[in-house]
Image (cartoon, rainbow, N blue to C red; front, top):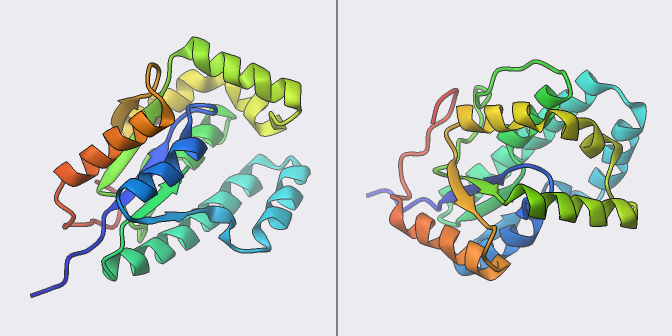
Length: 199
């Protein structure tokens, strides 16, 4: 009999929806691994260099590459029985770049590990805008986030096309949101991962 596979949990959503805050908490609650794209020491430098070019198609394909690398790491971990939590996976990359004008179908690329717990983290728009305002005051609201914001309707449309599991964090603490996601993880069968273009 095959050993149980770990769950693959992804958190996607608009900027300032709480992904970075909630993801490590979810990993702790499910005794899993919080897998970040910047695990490689060269990633921050490469990201900064790519962002500085201002080249939208190049940036999009660079993020696809980063997600594919994350996918392979997550595959190895889940096959060993570990659960994995990733924030900002393929849906985020496709949604943000489509909002900025780069057309790409809303689907997981062929060969990518598709999550069995794909979460769309949502928050009341007034709360999100206040978080963005604070980021702008701190100087941490990037050019790319500012470029996406005028067309977040398109980002949201892409997220809907992925059929992600919606979790509203508006009236909850980060810990409460993470516990709600952990409950979803426990309610789903950690088998039957699919690869390719569908969930």
